[in-house]
Image (cartoon, rainbow, N blue to C red):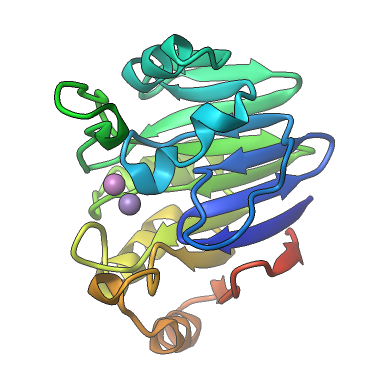
Length: 218
Ligand code: NI
Ligand code: MN
């Protein structure tokens, strides 16, 4: 499987199928026609272009309902559940965060916020969504054994590197990719000390990807 970081929290998984997660790129171009889309929550920097793309989209019930009203073939699900689309397995994990659908104007509650463990081609990729650190991340490791963990490190709205260090240990994925930082000044972080500290104290490797950069996983 190839994994392309497209900036902020947007990641494209390319294997048997192409899966686009959180289709928001601040100043880039989204890959046009992914086979499917996963949206962690309703905030504009995650819901992004999901409405315009119009591809089969996995999201928490409330966001899925909103997308269906926009004509998107969305599949609703909820924390702790799983859905298989075209051979790709999406497991929805909790995330501690909020979810207002800003693009809907006042009055649209996006339900909760989620992460996903996405299984394709025998590889499990955990995208944490926007979240605080929580100790049940240990269960995500124990249940799904992710090969890769995409973890927010920007702070203010999510974990910062200090918390993400502990999250990475809880999850135990051999590869961690920091996301959700440096998009705007309010979430400025240096990922280099995070990588150095985690690699010095654990067997976990950290890949710092530039927007547009692709790696092969695992
Ligand atoms: Ni958010
Ligand atoms: Mn966000």
